[in-house]
Length: 623
Figure 1 (cartoon, one colour):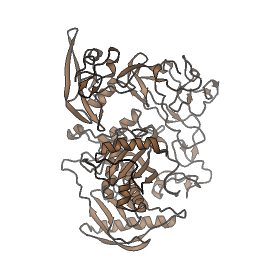
Figure 2: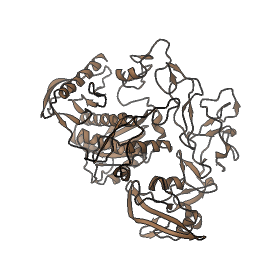
Figure 3: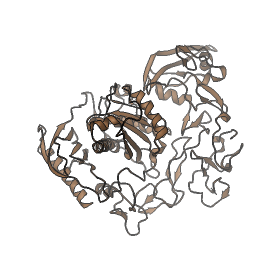
Figure 4: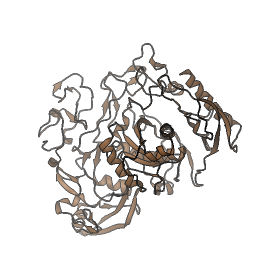
């Protein structure tokens, strides 16, 4: 461990030397590379750091088979690449250092912003998130490199992308599994990245058993795409949408492609209109952001960060709040994750100095300490059972409380599908409150609202471009009378262009007269993820009393056969003393305990939450 730390200092001092002497035009330099190996046999050669005395700088380096990575000195980004073939553990190798060719447009502005962090409990912005990532390298990647080189290359890409996310989004990309196809591809890799993505997600569903939040394919193919990849918007945590495909390139290029595709997975869509209108001025965040868009941006704009937080606050990304317990590489003290043989791990020396140093030394708890980090750890001691550690972000979320026996806040749970939300205007579906109003605002801006119900009743029954229940080849499908609220999404006060996606055709604006008033019934077919049309009412949206939209049909809730928790019947859920979570476990009200919340207790069982209102419970038969 001491050798590894000493090498880290050496590596960063080399970069510092280049910076201090302003050697920016040099074609190559000679480094002495010392690669350190752990006792377990795994190669620990991926590092993050900063340039000395430059607070806004950052460094991402890999020493696997040569030194390569990048560093940002507060003004420019520099790439480091090995230029020689010698890969011995101690060698003299030519390395190239060059300033990144990707520059910001002249209209880009730099904002230095400040954010006051709230404490106890933390907001979604303050709590560290974790994307548990699995990478699959296809046969074309292995064909370009050996299996070992392919795996090291993939780790370097993830290490660099992790730096972008850690520095700007308070989110870590944690590599938990990797698969390399040495013999042949497991499915056809198409030149169209969306076609490949759909096939890749089928492969994930049927064959990948590892637990992860997102799976990404690294392909040696060249896709017919502007940015060399594809991913599903907001798909993280989903078995069928949590993934992306990325084409081979230089480490920097592929790291940025991965950051972009993972960004889409976590709800970042880059509102181009806001950026061009100069609306992305930073006012909430402590870090440095560039408010601009470019093919290969190095920074997320503050609008991107806002989109991410909106995604989390709407109930998306629930899986990101669970800290990984198992990583791909062997256990290593100092990586920030408590692994086998460790009592604690506060991270690098610099990270430990900021938080946890008094409680944790060399991955062992100090005398008298019960914990070193986590939302349920305070002054090296565990918080009491029932202390709120994570607030509910919406009507479909469940607040989490400390258990009294762990420093970590419990897994992020939400209510099971079917609960009513937002004053009975919507229904909970995958932790999000689905309403037509929310969909209109998401697609067309904050001023947009769902159109009057008369618009739906008048237009969606006609089966035209301005109102329908989908399309069968070239024919618009008429909605049945009972399904009109599950067809084409009709809104009022929409913007001239959608906030995300690509508008197909023009806007469909129509005015309907009712009682001497003119009703605005507008919409548009907006494609995202290749073939998903956001211009329709989403599945899970309420469409009447005890009815939910699914596949453009308004169905009784009873037909969904929602699974449920113990202590539930036609009248009550969890014996009337709790809510049923997405894990089908009762989360009991204060003073109640047991699997069905039917036992009284001075303290609640495991999770404690404020007393729930009974009006939010689903009113349906459970089969």
